Length: 70
Figure (cartoon, rainbow, N blue to C red):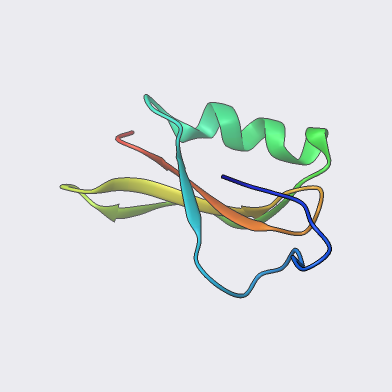
């Protein structure tokens, strides 16, 4: 879960939560900046077996990732 509290600091350090953006993460990636987020790594192939990923910061500065088969 993503939570807010006095002892939690948003940031780019620590684990990355991957969000399932199947069937094609391009659709979701194209909405990130319009919603106030920032693309860190555009869609790239992990491998044919493992699909694609992209990294972004949300509006609070948290680093998150998208994953999809296409």
